Length: 160
Picture 1 (cartoon, rainbow, N blue to C red):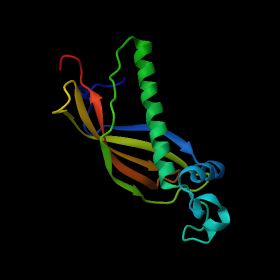
Picture 2: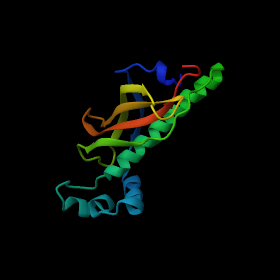
Picture 3: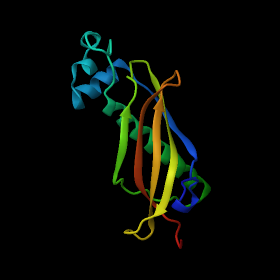
């Protein structure tokens, strides 16, 4: 169910989805958006403290967005199938505390998750609230590789 602001449970954790990084994906993303040598070439990566090819941190963040949106789309589809309305999600005014904790290598599968930290009505936008989430990704070995705090607008339940 695509929850309205009033339906959220502080502390609730959700798994958004998983993604496996391939060498080709890492290089393609790097060539377009972060063309540093250790993201583009295995041999160049071996010459660095990484010891091999690694994904751009921005790539891990972009994949978070991909799996998060896909998760929300699945919730919306379930609502439509059940004949329920879906809460509208608004833009994000930003994020903070972005950390890339471990390198992501070809073949790594990251599982992306989030936990609701807070939810409050917006003082400036009637009918909307702000949701703060702690988001992270773990690799297949259970090691956290990425984390950040996001804030986003979420529709309030009509009449709230």
